[in-house]
Length: 156
Image 1 (spheres, rainbow, N blue to C red):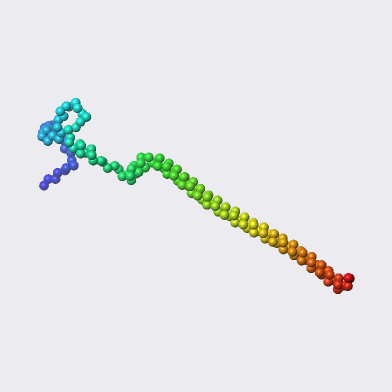
Image 2 (image 1 turned 45 degrees about the vertical axis):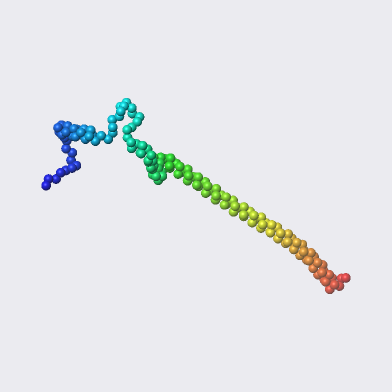
C-alpha cells in the first residue's frame, strides 16, 4: 500500500484551479446563507433573523483573575511602583503604631517614677522626723548622763 504524505504541499495546475473555483462557485450559489439585499446601497440593516437572538445574549467577560494578571503583565512598572508605595505606607503605619506603643510605655514609666519619687519624699520626711527625734533623745540622754556624772562626782 502506498503511503500518502498529507503534510506535503503540491501545487495545482491551471485546470485543477479552474475546476476548484467552479466547485466553490456552484456550492455557494446553491447553499446561499444570506439573501440578496433588496437595496444594495442600504448597509445599516441586516436580513438575518438570528441577529435579534444574539443581541439578547450577553457575552461573558474575563474573570477578575485574568483581568488582574493582564493588568500586571501590561503595566508591570506601575504595578512595581504601586507595590513599593504600599510597602512604604505599611512600614510607616507599622512605625506609627510602634511609636504609639513606645510612648505609652514611656508614659507608664513616668507615672511609676512619679510614684517612686513621692514615696522617696515621704521616706525622706520620715527619716528627717526620726533624726529630729533621735537628736532630741540624744540631747536628753546627754543631759541625763551629765546629771548622773555630777551626782556621782558630787558636784551638786
